[in-house]
Image (cartoon, rainbow, N blue to C red; front, side):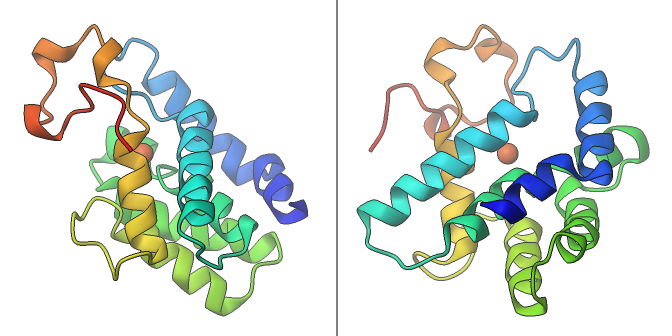
Length: 160
Ligand SMILES: [Fe+2]
């Protein structure tokens, strides 16, 4: 997991995570900090193990850690976060020793992570989309009334 720890310590990663934290200080809805990113990483990896899919663990963690990194650009400059995030992630991944093919797969997953039909079953895109949704604890959320998420998509119970 050496490359993952390099991402965590990368100045561009830290800079954007800090901006996201500041922008979300008073947010009543789901936040997009490190806790969320790690929840997504672990859920993705559980899915990989349960379904006997062969992905490198650090590819999974890189996609999860970086998938919302464009949030601050969305808050401050109205650039959709999946678009902004793919560009920011590419710079970080290159400097943390990821190869071109890996960078392309990860940034594609980030770019499509809000799309319900993201990629083939068990693709990195699809794993990221579902883990992102499964990570949210709607059943314990105090902002349910104001949430824009359609009720049928919410996690009202713990799902498989
Ligand atoms: Fe997310």
